[in-house]
Length: 322
Image (tube, rainbow, N blue to C red; front, side, top):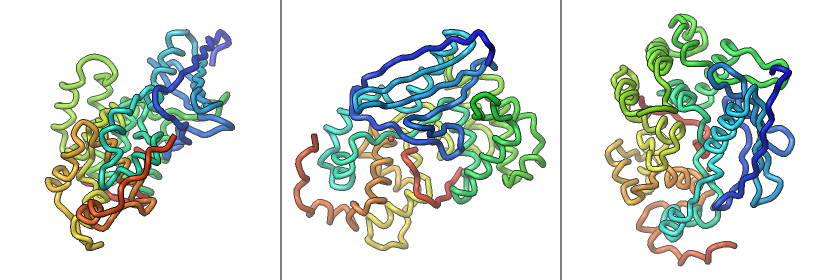
């Protein structure tokens, strides 16, 4: 940071129950002390943002940057990433008695979909996660970050590599990081598109159309970008293998059953408007053993208890389509 540093501090009162999460799996957002910290860049200028939650109804964002507009930008991006401003009451009112996710909705009101500060970060992660185990994909991302971004000497954090930096890598260099050759080409082409266009400004539709035309960027990848990168809570990556298996088990009671992708989208149709957030609650309910063997059994379950006074994490191992 330069000596002439601007510091900004904003306190936010969440409109809905909120719990500050921990660090990100790629290591860029880190839990430190009572809060989280993240290094961002705006037009090449560093912005250091820290977030703490001293009380349930108080969340404090602090930023240090070379200018006040940059500091405010950094706070806006982390408010988006944490989902602190989301009012989820309409979702909870609608689905608190749902036979499948109702218990998760009632008992986890703070649950939110984890977002990335930049859409590009979500796209990079999605391409790395295609067709391989989640842990292996995360390690590829960490290698890529270490290879391209030096650690800030003052705060000890790194930022995500810029699209231009990734686009400039040879496919062979990406393959050395354990990215499959086809995936390496897809990532470089997507990075080249975003090196010329900013998904945070202007109309994103032309950029989305260009990305969708890249071989290897399929519906699942775009759903991940929409959900985690743009915060569209109606986007659901239904083609994820974890969802295909879980829905198959729910519909049949057979632990080896699997539905196809159209069936998975049909499964989420009743949650229209909130399908991505419903998917996060479905994962949370499954992880806690709250799901019945089939929807029919759920409908016969005991009445829901009274209401009490967010990539939520995906299953530990998964692979996904393009």
